[in-house]
Length: 110
Image 1 (cartoon, rainbow, N blue to C red):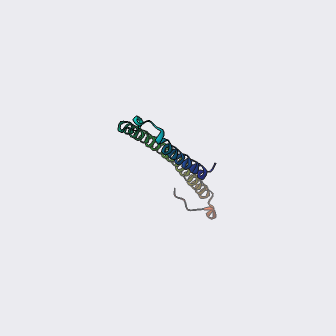
Image 2: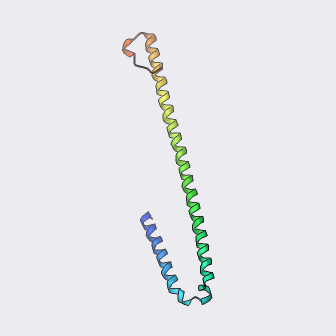
């Protein structure tokens, strides 16, 4: 499924659950709607929301650490390629100098 379909499905589920809760409120016994029960439900909802935020934070931190690790590997590989090219050019420059062929001389950073 596409992300848009997933989000619409979640939206419909949450909205439907809310409507079902509103329609069932009249059939719930009165002691379930007391202030103590409502406070306990709010407290539990807050704990669940806090734990969900903690899990999402850890997930984002893990993804960033993985991205940074791969980025460092790519940077290291690019630096190794540049170093190898520089060594190759210096080697060609020194061979050209030994063979006394001015046409093959190139500028070298070594």
